[in-house]
Length: 451
Ligand code: ASP
Image 1: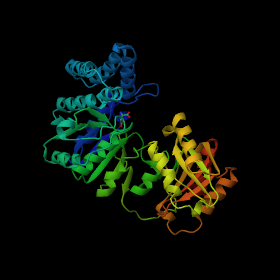
Image 2 (image 1 turned 60 degrees about the horizontal axis):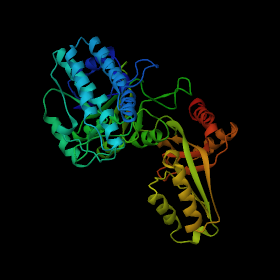
Image 3 (image 1 turned 135 degrees about the vertical axis):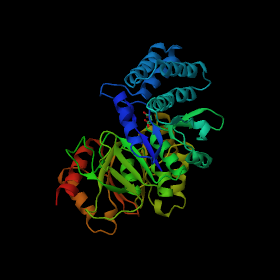
Image 4 (image 1 turned 45 degrees about the horizontal axis):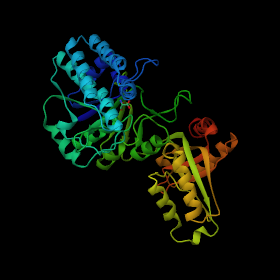
């Protein structure tokens, strides 16, 4: 059995949905279909999820969102018309949106999640209707009925363990199941969404629950590339990647799969196949547990900005028992997750994503580190970018770091920090955000353009 997930561009228009139909009906193993909300057909379009967020925000600030609501309805109406579906489905979608609004709110985040989830939910209903209109037995599945339960962290939910067993029952249902991505329900019955891009996560949870042979993730590119195609012209396509490699690349900017998608699949060893809805016969990229290293130590280069670093210096830090724990404790009390903690004898730097550090938190953390830990100095550095050189082939291979640092030096990029985990699957460089593109190009040229 295959679980297939289609992203927003694969559902952005009637023509795209017809391709989804052809793909699903061309292979009887494709039994569970996870859909995103319609995305952009043209660059100037707005994704339905963003339209819904605007709608929720208009309602919250003015008590009225009629214009935004009708814009969403019209978007679906255009798709329905192109699929020759009757007006009934459009009316249903409009009613669905109105009901979500009329339920009111006691908490803004809860309300926004309920509205945001309408994109996927109505898309799944529409796709099921379309399959039925073409004489194929397909059924919309509601995540609550199927038992997809999530933590009540609005906009940032995580799956609760009992969901896997509940969802495993879908395996025994007949026909094609159309399941909306991106949301589930809290134990108290509220709609809760995953982070943005989270339909990928729904797909992976389903693939693991039904023990799929493969999780096919359909998007709008032929494969995963060794570097961002917006930066590198015709970068090398990657035919096979391991979960660990994909995880490292996704961490630093490869947005083809949501970062949290791989965790459940990895545990169960369900392979992922990234494929192009517009070219379904192309092999795409397989993501698997292990692979043979055939072509060089490095498989891809990724990079992302938006990090800050807290630099702490205290003479004789290495002799102070519990120093690191005390730093981490301060962060924990402020609910700030850390990314990396490179350290020296008397120094420790904590790398954090900028979005977790507002001004108030920043002052409190700096103040507490300075006073509670009696450090010699503490400072904050902004505009940090992380660049990752990733590849299973680096394991016990001499000289990869030296090639990377030489390439960076030759292009004038100053390295602020280097980190290599014990798995040796990646080397990470901390650099100034302004050098990010230059660094990725230099590293790509070094590992992919030189023979
Ligand atoms: N529609 C949601 C978003 O735009 C989720 C997804 O497409 O995966 O973030």
